[in-house]
Length: 147
Image 1 (cartoon, rainbow, N blue to C red):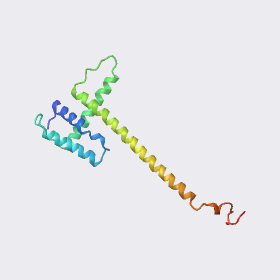
Image 2: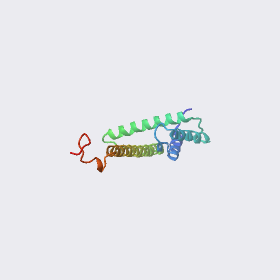
Image 3: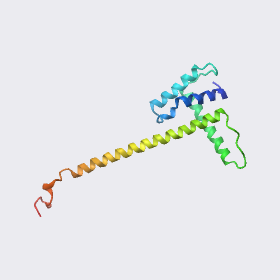
Image 4: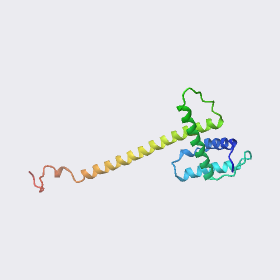
């Protein structure tokens, strides 16, 4: 399939609706969201699509890579005023911001999960260290006799 600007805009619109970046990379849910995007695009009459999950994902990765490269080049250039973004560029910018926000939320969730696990592990270790220590054991020497 050859991609046109209309195809790219339709892809970005669908991505804004489905939001595949809500899910962690490599999960079944994220794959299902890409599949949902492909199915919704194939239902469109104009422009006509014939794509699968991988084709949609690959095309978006290419669009996002080109967009980031163009934006970085514009930021590095001095003395120029970039043109107003068209619908595709605006959608790509929104998707990129959304993706970064979701990645930050996932990272915070993972960090909180690790901290909770570490806290539970420390709590268990403290309980094990204190096990068997009661009032009867206090004041005894090495051999168990009172000092």
